[in-house]
Image (cartoon, rainbow, N blue to C red; front, side, top):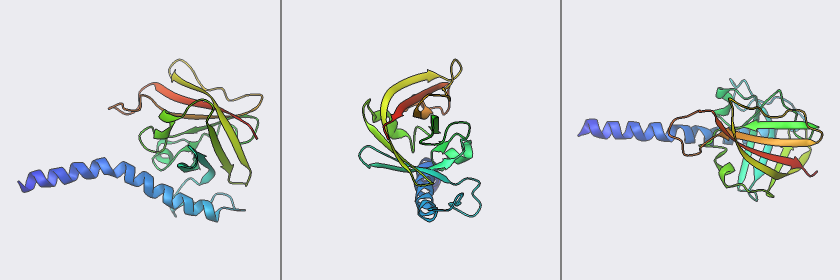
Length: 180
């Protein structure tokens, strides 16, 4: 009986670990964001190899996320990441931000065309984007456009949202154009 109880607690801990880590990391990154006004590359914790580059809000403020520099798996474990090969928020080109489907970017499944996303750069400017497209893309057959004539934003996560196995080739892509 004690073995089953221990196994049950272990399984619960494994299931709660990722969401708990994601929540705690966002709390630490919110603090780093408040310290970053005027400074660049403020690490959210002493051993971090990433830093806040933007603050993303959506769904009338219900979603409030700090976006980190980089798109490595280690970065995405803590929060959404801005892909360095893409444009910075507000610049001409496509700013690409990736996140995990089961934590930070779970809200994407409920976004609709016409909704607004706010993105505040660590350098200060705030930008408002309007969702203009929602697509499911096979990553083996296509890629995201980096060079655009106007400032754009692409939010990318794995698809389907309820997949049992992580990864897979399908991506859920939300495309938004900058209004100001």
